[in-house]
Image (cartoon, rainbow, N blue to C red; front, side, top):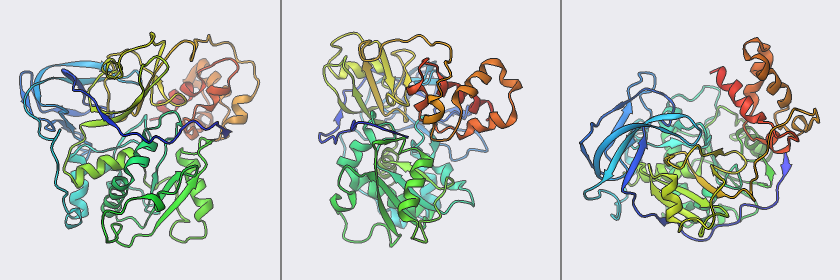
Length: 438
């Protein structure tokens, strides 16, 4: 672990609803299942929130369904790049017609009268995914239904961003914890949780003391709840294994919470906001909160915008550029990706976009490994990133089975990249090794 300077300041302003793009590009396979069925054809008129694609994989019946973020007409289909460089089929929709959700108030529904199994199906229908693992989103309904028997059945909620440059989860915690709390109560009910842990940034007041109480009764239905402060300057404090270790250290004396492990369900603020809106308000996931910032922009802030909006559209919402960006970084400067092009659409697992200049992030040419050992000393998983990198360059098919399996321990914190004197893409190489085993 390394100590970071304080980066993630408290965000006190409100999210701003963006203008509507004339055309949205909606990818239909952000979960990477590769088995979605389109339910619309070119020329079809669609409503805001209408299901336009759903999984046809018999092994993934509860995959999150895809909805139209705007009312309009399907103008065509295309293959588009996603923020991680991979491709997905997409539906192009041109704005036209009246809105079903935007600008309209929704009456809260009494979800406690619905059975847990029905709520799980609703989570799938309304398109809720779990973005705790931001670069590998999962259908939340599928995770609930396929939980491992080894799990302690405690729900762990991370109320801050594991990449401190991202800010979106922290913003939602600061401005909407009441909705997060309701989302956690709904999820705990659906999964029959034995307890709930809220892990918060200990540099800020505990949400337990600052949350607005909107209901007089116990929304958690007597489920035990704990609040655990986390030192977010200890990077990577927000990653799964490190977070679980922190929680266990502080709650080891409690019988219910002392058995938390990697098989338990971990979620973030964004996921619970979407869950609350889906189950209590019956609103499908058609918008996303995105932190837009960078030294190339005139204005930075949190935007709430329709899914399928492009990066180009984002920059226009912030008043355009002060100077031409050299790099566009999606999902944080430590763990994020360089956008392959400006036509990349915003998906459910995009939380931040940074427009940065070459002064802020200059280009570097990778050199040969100098065997300094910094990557080994900083790795929280105890791996040898340099060794894994060299083995992959030589021949991944001749790699020792034990060494290949060791790559699965990598949590993707990218600390090895940050300290590498030779600027080698160590983390990316290890990620390639991990994917080769799946």
